[in-house]
Length: 345
Image (cartoon, rainbow, N blue to C red):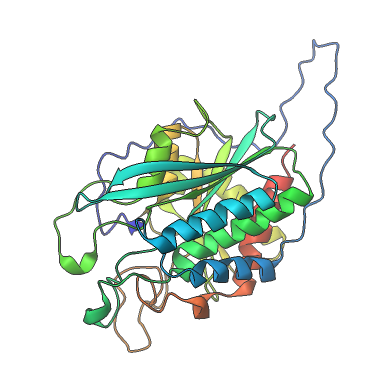
């Protein structure tokens, strides 16, 4: 992902007339002589942060999950198997995508479907690949080495795997599609001072947006999770998300506050970030919003050096490891998302 304030990304048309999210049921037609059967409310499951933590650790144990590596192939199989184990209909969408340096990446979008018979659907997504460069590492000799990506990549996937496990136990009243997007983090490295190019990030979601797993796929809305595991992480209103559907953003943040997680979910405007949700919204024409960590306050690392981004001092460095994963943050995000989908009728 990239902060749009730092790297201008052209060609991302924001559709102002996107669906506005409504949390109330449609009013019945007064002229109708029949009444729709009421859908029984399903109790929201309890999110298990210990499980989510283990799913993150399992991914990190494979090593960096960079396309075209054996670690990437092995982890893809693990993720597909886990979704199958949790009762999903699984599709592994394979694609050749072109990276910034014109190399061909053998990408795999891993898709799990629940309640495929239901027309109303919600998309939950995260990216599972890791950064092939530690371009923000303090040690220049390590900047061309791939990172573990415990928070940036594995955390969102770990939360969604735990949500998948809960869905397998208790089905919500809506169809759920979980997508682990690939090749999100393969944008050109900052430390090489290359000329800016368009759309070099989020390659897996760009491919899926043009080639969805179901013809003419649409969901009522989507929720993207990115970097959702750090200690004391704060999630602000992301700029594109507020453009796409401010009602949906406020609804989710209100739920987080209602169930006691306003410490993490800040009702304040954050940065505008190019992430997978942009391409989902642009290419599939339904709103997808981003729950992503942002650091808006103290942006100096422990050595007193200024951090020129808002993602934490370990972002795109070799310090993005399991030491930066906190079960309390995982719980806040996972329980909030579960509450959102289990309130659907």
